[in-house]
Length: 435
Ligand code: GUN
Ligand code: FE
Image 1 (cartoon, protein in one colour):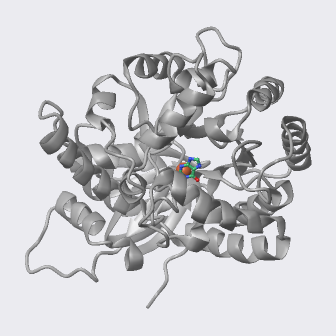
Image 2: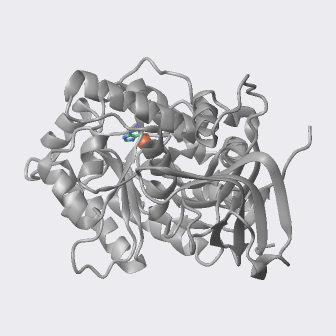
């Protein structure tokens, strides 16, 4: 059913300044597209089926711009390490297991189910370097009804023997085999080119990926300027590059250059230490930043200058970066982003005001949603992704505003129990449970 009306207390963003609040109002969906939010239902929609959610909150679905599916199984473990040691000791040994399809089925089955019941409606996901397990992950995600990008990871450098790809040629051949193998199979699950990060990729591999991106017109996702140890290593590997992002850009893996025939964008996770030149190139090429505050704390990366990115008008959304981040909760990512921005303001630069709740909400909805098209808002013409939230399990002695209820829901982890329904591109993928 793609034509319907949802009634309830509706909140969404038009811009980053302010969350719009519509108490006891109507959200109209036709053919999976929002026709807007109305305080009283226009005559022409009166015949559509109406679902009345009463006092519950209705908000756009949340967008996770950066998450690693194979790392879900060990989230919350090894959290006392820093990035490069954490990769070698935690991430790589776990990811090596995905050569075994039985293991992949179990672990990805859990991941897909948890994503289905989470607050996330859209996500850009790293798999591992294994094509078969990546196809399996895509099948499982397709069944959830979520809309996702999924990437088979490319890595032919600096990883253990049981995970590294033997050569650039083999990595590229497996990527092509994966892309051809999924061609036309999925409606809601799309491929994204995924060089892990510069230390994992030889220049020969980057060159091959450049060709593949052109041949298939693919979006790209990777990591950028995350951690001091990583950045020092990139400088050693790539002395000729002007800055980290330049390593990707030399191979057309960094957004879309002006006049480029490529139509799909690029997500770069982290950008904690991007300098002026890197920022200017991200802006020019329309690169999306996935800000991943929990991960930046857990693996000691640093505090990203998100206010600076907002002032400069860069594309930005939030990422859970599980398992650098310990949870897939995008409500938690919102509140972590606010807390981190406060520490940046207090400790690093007092001209960079902390994020407001309204800004963090915008980043988690419309900011990241833009990577998927017209996504992340209830404005007319947007694809309809919605969450219905019940906050009755968080009782309060007074009547709160809708804004207060939403902020409290985010800070108190309301999503653990409080997501009652979920719509993705106009399809209800999670129906209200009656307790
Ligand atoms: N850089 C390269 N690989 C990874 C990863 O798996 N997680 C994080 N946070 N950073 C990375
Ligand atoms: Fe990551």
